[in-house]
Structure formats: structure tokens, C-alpha cells
Image 1 (cartoon, rainbow, N blue to C red):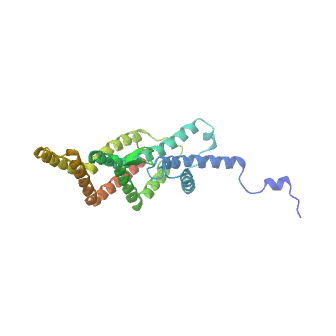
Image 2 (cartoon, rainbow, N blue to C red; image 1 turned 90 degrees about the vertical axis):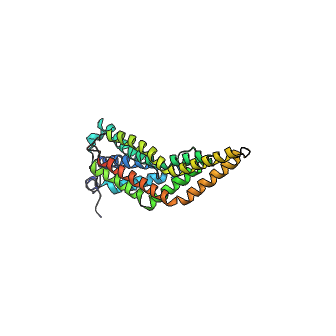
Image 3 (spheres, one colour; image 1 turned 120 degrees about the vertical axis):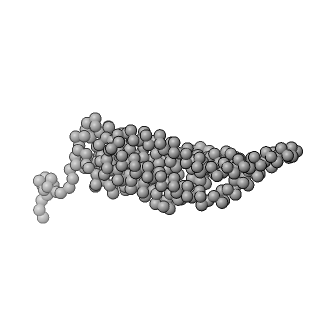
Length: 273
């Protein structure tokens, strides 16, 4: 049996400690962009998704993309540039996820306005995504949006767009954050516009209903406005909700497609911006 000496031990194949630390740092930096996106994205970043699930998804996605990323030298990690790179990676992931969340907030805003104008705002529950009270109509609209978003593989498109950002903007290159500011302002404006389009049929029906109730109560002042008008308004809203399911689905589908297209434009314009 041959004796094992110090020379044979040092000649064993494997990684040195310095190389292992460098790989761990590179893996950690590569996971920052994906982890920030998973935290701020509308579906995976919700409160009902456990932190362990998001952490596992971040590690698995980083393992997929890590071998295709440009490695950062150890000299960069030991300088002030490491802080800039870390904050830039976090900012890219957070901005992409928050802009997508702003687009999806249009359906919540539309549901709140419909509930407030129809008297359904009394039916409210704790929203697990935000922690505050939200009308049930908003929750139904938002769940409808999530079902359509996942059934059309929108979440896969969003994740693949984020992974594509590693090719467009490798780790270590500082992007121009003007495109995030302009895209955030544009997404906020589009949120109000899309919410107005979605709630427009309900507003028209409620307006016609209130005008009809006003004419009836003017003709017969003895009728109780609140007892008759409230029930007629609720029935009218339920009828509109039932018959506008197809058009609502088309509007939500257009909203998700526009949000994903905007996300791809943002990622593609990181360098040119």
C-alpha cells in the first residue's frame, strides 16, 4: 500500500478555496437580478407564495443561466465597483418586476371603481398580496387575470425575457436607468387608461340605471330611493358581469400582452437607453 504524502494530497484534482469563493460570489451576483424580479413580480412575488419557493426558483434559474453569463473577476469584487454592480443588478430586477406589477394593477383599480360605484365595496376582504382590504370584485378580476396570464404561458415569457437580459446586458455593465424611469411613468399612465377602458361598460350601465331611478323617483316621490335603487343597481352590475365575461377576457388578454411587450422593450433598450 502506497503511503499518502503531502505531495500526493496537493496534486489531487479539484477546486482551490480561492476559486470556490470566486464561483460562489459570481453565483450570488448572478442571482441578484433574478431574485429581485421574483420578489417584485405580480405572481411569484405575492405574499401567498412562501419565501422558500421563491428562493428555490431563484437558485434553479440562476443555475440555468449562470454558465452563460460573463464571469466577473475577483479584482472587481474587492473594489468599490462591486457595490455599484450589486445595486445595479437589484435595480434591474426590481424595476422589471415593479413595472409588470403596475400594469397588472389596472385590473385591481378597475375592480375597485366598479365596486365603489355599484355598492359592492361593502363586500371586502383582506388581500393576501397587499395586506389591505380590497373589494371582492377586484379580487375576482385579479384572479381572472392570473388564470389567463398563466394559461397563456405569460409567466414563462416574463422569465425568459429576464433571462435574455443577461445576454443583452451582461453582469458588470451599468445600464442607463432613464428607461426605467420613463417606463414606470408610462406604465402608471397606462394603468389608469386600461382601468378606464375595462370599467367603461359598467359605468355606462350604472349611469343609465341611476338616470332611470331618478326619473322614477321624480315621477313617484313616495318611493324609497335607497331601497329600490340599491337593489336595481346590484342586479344590473351582476348582469353586466355575467354577459361581459368574453369582452373582459379579451381586455385582460390585451393587457397582459401589452405588459409583456413593454417588458421586452425595456430589457431590449437597456443598452441603447
